[in-house]
Each structure stands twice: as C-alpha cells, then as structure tokens.
Amino acid sequence: MRILNLFLKEPLPGQVRGRLAESLGGEKAVLIYRAMVRILLQQLSGLEHCHLRISYTPDDGEEAMRFWILPEIIDDPSIDLDPHLISFAPQGPGKIHTRLAHAAERAFQEGFRKVAFIGSECIEVSSRWIHAAFAQLNDEYDVVLGPTPDGGQHLLAVQRHLPALFKDPSWSGPAFRRTTEQAAKHGISLFTLPALPAIRTEDDYQAALTGPLGPRFKKVTDKLEKKL
Image (cartoon, rainbow, N blue to C red; front, top):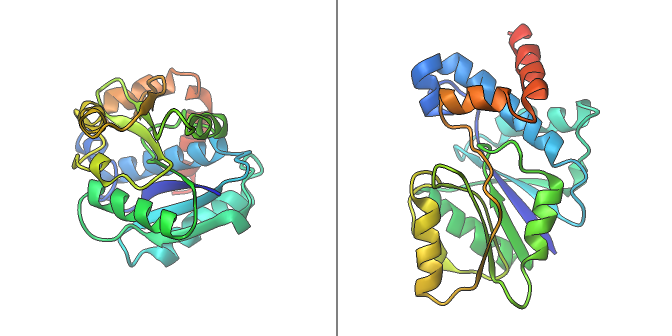
C-alpha cells in the first residue's frame, strides 16, 4: 500500500506563495498558486496503486479544500485521478517538519508501507516521477529525496517511520543538506533523485513560463485570470 501526501494551503491572499506575493501582490500570488496546483494535478494523472491524500492547512479548511480540489479533478478532462482514491486530512499544528512527521506516523499507523510527500512548489513532478521514487524504496534504500537547485527539497519518500529526518523547519533554504546530514548521522540509506526547479520567487515563476511546462502553465493562469 502506497500513499502520496500532497501538502497544500487554502488559496487565500497572504497565506500562499509569500515571496511571490511580495513582488506581484497577494491576489496574483493566489492565481499563480491555483495554476500551479492544477498543473501538478495534471502531472499526477495516471498515478497507479497509490492513494492520494490532500494534507491541508488551516485545519478548519476541509470544506474549502474539497470545493477547490474535487471539481478540479472531476471537471478537468486532462486530470486522470480517481476521486475514490483521494482523501483529505488536516496537517495539524506546528512547523512544516512537525506536520510532515505527524503525517508520516499517521500513514504508517493506517497500514501504508511506502509514504511520499510533495508540496506545490515543483510543477514538474509527475506520476512517473512518483512511481520512480517508490521503486527506489527497496532493500537498499529506506529514503528517497528530491532536491531543488536552491538547496531545498521537492520530494521525500520513506518506507518506515524515521523521525530523525524531520528535523529541518523548512523545505527551502538548506533543507536538502540538513536532511542528508541527518540520514548520514543516523545510518539511514538514502537515494537522491535528480533536481527539479521550484517556484518560490518571481524569477522562478518567469523561468517556469519559459520551461517545458511553460505554455500549459501560462494557458491555465490566463484561464483562471479571466474568471476573476
């Protein structure tokens, strides 16, 4: 049994994509965030033999998240995900590393044997990428880690509960180095995926528009903007 936890925030001004909001404004940041999530759901199409859990914050945002995510999946023909294999759960209190640790512990208690985590920052993550990460959780590796060029992380996958890995308070900055250091310190075998770009700043956003998913990203953003 495998589970992918997608960590999301309710799309409200001032609550999402803070560094984008600083340069582009809160409303534009929300628009870009919603477009990023739609692209990511399209990318995850074809996810097989894997439960998808939308881990959301704030904890009282379940209704808002369901009204946002489920129509995206049901109404968009380019998104091929089974709603029956999707659940929603609050992230709970604490900083991101604490919430990740709680989600991992909960998933293993529920009987899942391979547990992966992603956020919304990297739209190039795909179902094939997730399957590749799970495939590396074997007799040789207990952890799979996906870095970003800025030193952060875009993916973490484990096949047993490893609290020692969840020590860094953020997935950006030097998070990748700190996670690898923790793995080495505790003798945890780790496989590293190739780096994928994250969208955190306006420069990252502009770079994404010229990247492999740029035309689709712009089309989704423009479509959402017209609905405002």
